[in-house]
Image (cartoon, rainbow over the protein chains, first blue to last red):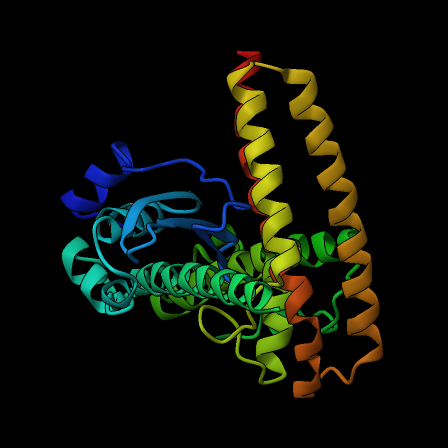
Length: 134
Length: 176
């Protein structure tokens, strides 16, 4: 199957590959996978006290489209507020990368990873508040 | 989709005897060999050829435990594939992420010993998962959607296979 130029570009030069400290209270980690293809994707965000995503990193073991989807997601996340980040939809990723129908699930995985990273960050913040309120 | 068990004329079960499977494939391939149809009418030649292709496809499916499991599930009416299967457990994802990163580190260090040790550990896991799936398929009604209980292990098997494919590519790269 032919990959689009944008997928190849992200695959060959993935942005923001790496790890953030998952124990940092400012960091939210999302870990998701697609059982039908054995892909695993980790996406992390670092959020400032003002609620802005200062940094985003990913690591994906999977096909070119899965790598490109998560790479693009980290690019889009940087500089956004948490609320803005939540508005990122898989269809936007699929459109930007010209993903064919059989690869749409890769963009779904990236959206899941974003949501899961945000949920992790929020649960850390809630736990911190609960602790402070004691 | 054609039922590969029916095509090869073997019982629809997960624990297939690999020798019997190979024997059925060989016998059918011989019977359908183009040489036998050299003097036959064109329609019959075409039919035997397309049957031979079906037989080869079915053999490839049934030889592979992942595709064999998928074929059993489809027969029983359990949807398989993207979006139809349950999400992998967080523990499995965490573990596979860690193992794949260790494999990547071993590759960078050109540490063949580490690559082989990681491979062996995953092979052991693969055998355990296969054995457990065999037990689950054996006790379940083969035509019931209750077979869906094997889906998490099928997912795990695909993760292990991915790891092993990657590991064998790295091993080849490091030994040549």
